[in-house]
Image (cartoon, rainbow, N blue to C red; front, side, top):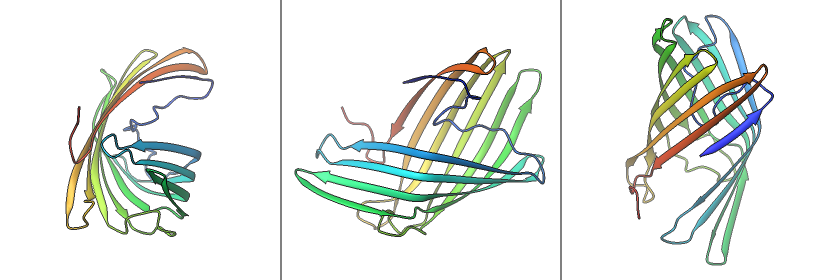
Length: 201
């Protein structure tokens, strides 16, 4: 679980927001730095990921539909296993998404969206798997006063390790955000990820 206090307008780190930018409007989001560490407990393999300049452009196509295009301008991955280490670096893949707001209920403050996406293998330097992949995200939020609850279900269709087909990975996240006083808020978020191989004890 993550617990963060900030003096900026707060958004969850994993859970997507179902809000749209609006018809004809354009929004750019830019993350300066993202870090990730993934360890396989069965083999001891460790994957460290560094992404710089993660950019997402959102264009409002209609009152309930956005088009989004994202890319990591620089990505570095280091895989280590029993003293062996391999590092690759380059441009990341392009991701194309649409966000469809399927429910918005003003009295309850509820919003629900569908975000199908496809990843195009545009990477350089061997930082990707050179395969087209995709998936679906389903974010939900409910705002009551100064408190916002959010949750998201996600399924990713990924190329398998043997490069013979595709398999599904599942992920769920939830958060609660509370405004203390403007512009200070605090939030807590939790994440559960189920890889294609399933959960192991």
